[in-house]
Length: 490
Image: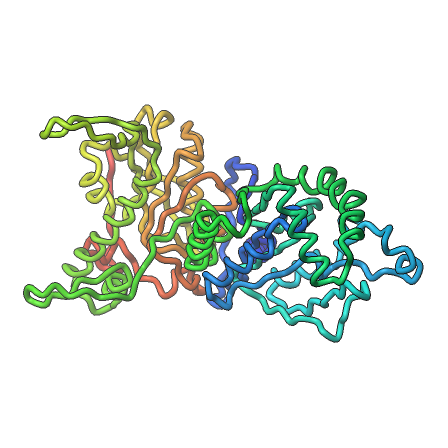
């Protein structure tokens, strides 16, 4: 019943764009139940980059340089030129009067269908368009496999809103008109066998008017404008660096721009004094997930991970420029972080994160929320809350080491919003997150930020995070799972 809602919710995410959601954030006591399958996962969503610009502006060159620098088979190129309509016999007789730069010249429906198949993880066959016969050569089709990054290039790919909505990043290659004309003359005379008179006639009759009427107006949709096209190596280097970042992100980060996963590494560095091992994030996760680790070591490495998450979360706070005078009498220009800040821990596991927050933010106020789960149906009940009176004027770091079903998080965040805290002012910090919980929280509150150190496989039939690390509060505070503990807060 309720679990089916989340199944539909997860399935619906396959059509979500990286730009995020705009949903109603009002509180709803009917929180969604998680799916219990550990095999259900988020369908990989490719990062689609549109590259538009005038004819001969250098779009293909830009795409080729990006692919060359990435040297990664997870990046593919789709050309809008492959989706020209086949000309009829009547059109072929008057081909000199056919406008190849008009939106109607392209089979946009087929382009959309092809892109949808690629986004759904299906391989596609893209025909090769012959500019001498003006026909698609289906026997020479190019097989394009599903990829992590798709470069979609063409003069009019920003013209249709349906195509634009498929893109996560839009690039407009802006090249001087004289340069574009010179390139077009060279290309059409050499590659297409046309004489210069035909090229100039077509340019003045179709190409320039179409650029002014249909292509240039789409420049306003671009996220990035690259002057000089393929000659602008600085811009291309920055784009390549951004794509590499996206390729290294967890798939959920490509769906939810408000989810941040601290990058982990398998590297183990040795301190040569005593040859003591120093583990990075992945190594520390390995230790605290081990059922046989001692309580002392569990707390030690958990505290280190918590400190990293807290510091990463603090990096998302607003700041202003500040100048100070150093002991040498010099002026140093730095930053001053937001002072209106407080922490809120979800009792009891969230209290394990308070010391790290206090160590980073001297004298910070910390509130408490106690939420009780009733029975096996996952319903949550707010038992206790003690929050700063002026919390609505503060940025809030919500502390809970495990994001499982997302139900407790929804209850806690809803309480903060009812207390007047703006949704963008909430940063939710945890050590591990189940995909189901990420879906529930991010869909209901698309403007909060979630900072975590690792995304889990999922939840089992008992709604426990898998592979997880057990009952975090019991392991951290040293209480047995069977103990009946009564906590009184005054």
